[in-house]
Length: 196
Length: 139
Image (cartoon, rainbow over all chains, first blue to last red; front, side):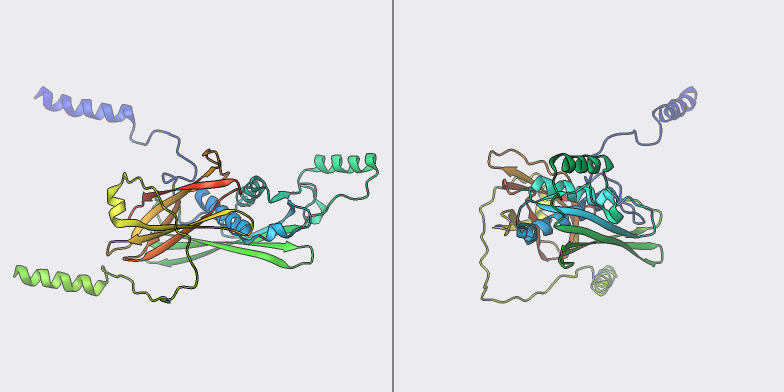
């Protein structure tokens, strides 16, 4: 009789002590253990979109057409047309890093939208250098990268489907979009579910 | 009675399309020549290999001098399969090239479908590659 009471008590204590939730642990970023949400862009979606854009851009050979390689890239606006607040650097930084590592393009940080420099100190250094060396102007950007992220949602019963379209355009100094890429990622699930 | 139930079940399955496969047509006289490469395979997940198998691998160089790889997969089953894949790249010294952004890409392949997955090397110094295939969750 005593055992009948003691055993469940010990078991309950063990469960209480070890906790019901999953212990905090590291997972590989972009790996199969990453959580998947239908209603938001996950990190693996950004990585996949950036990988796709970089591969297509490098394969196109458009960056090799500049007179003095590597091509200089200026970052333009990435419009967020999704229902969530996102930092577009999660997409663009990955593209910039991959292009820099490929040796085909470098990104200017002293020239940006509305004359705003991404790195004001670097711009100051550049101007100072120009003044000291009596240079007239530095090389300008060969291309600008702009884009849009669009979310399309569909529902049927308990099932929700979200498609995220990552659209990118590379425009040359003549105003022509010399490369355009689009990657669509579609996720489906019930409203309360998360997947792996 | 049991036979009737089994027959009804089979009809229901056929009607709901659980065995949807795929028909395809292509030109018999191919213009493009694929540069097929001999591959070396390590199969640790026989279940995945039975479901989604590698048919062949061909490579090409992009105009910018990057290695481009295409792997043809075949779904050997009569049901849709979820799988994940990931490319790794190696330079002329066999050292792995660290790609700034590597993701395991989730993909699906229809019943009996043949599908190509492609990837472009992150740098022009990449000479070799490895494709990792991981079984996905079938929902």
